[in-house]
Amino acid sequence: MHIEFAKKQDALYISEMSRDLIEAGLGWRWHRGRVMRAIQDPDTVVIKATITSRLAGFAIMRFGREEAHLDLIAVKPPYRRLGVGLALLSWLEESALTAGISIVRLEIRETNQNALKFYEQRGYRQIRRIKGYYCGQETAIAMARDLWCGVSINTIRND
Ligand SMILES: CC(C)(COP(=O)(O)OP(=O)(O)OC[C@H]1O[C@@H](n2cnc3c(N)ncnc32)[C@H](O)[C@@H]1OP(=O)(O)O)[C@@H](O)C(=O)NCCC(=O)NCCS
Image (cartoon, rainbow, N blue to C red; front, top):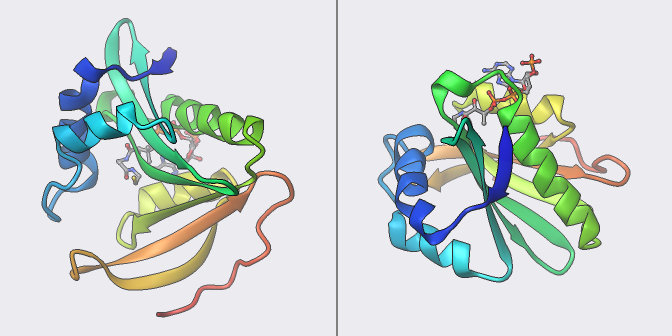
């Protein structure tokens, strides 16, 4: 497996993976133009994982002054449970630490139990439920991890 920065020519493929593997049933917000802007944004990191030169997965993280936000991560079904997701997430977490950032936040669909397990095994904790977060239709679970010392808030709240 090889992890590297995504290039402009990866934008369409990444956006299609987001549409099919993450945003299914919600409408397509991470279209090619948005992924392209993320690739070009100096405060956003878009990485891809390839296996024998084939795109296996990608992840997008925005870096703020004190916190980072994981916008998207996906691995194509044939490559799942091989450690690709973990490798992508670890890569971004290392980058956050290098930038002096310890808090990583993200939101996932409440129905996405596989991703919930993926994040929880990595030390992310459920912070709160956000009703209607996705197009007014679906509840999100907000999660966070403190890369230095573990999260301080781990109770779930309803908004
Ligand atoms: C979530 C996702 C990125 C995980 O990628 P992956 O490459 O399969 O994950 P890994 O192989 O690195 O898994 C690491 C660990 O996470 C946990 N895990 C991952 N997928 C899991 C699942 N479906 N069920 C239970 N635990 C899971 C396991 O503990 C796993 O370790 P193990 O395989 O040794 O048991 C992948 O399932 C995916 O692309 N899902 C669709 C998109 C998505 O939901 N993205 C998240 C919201 S943006």
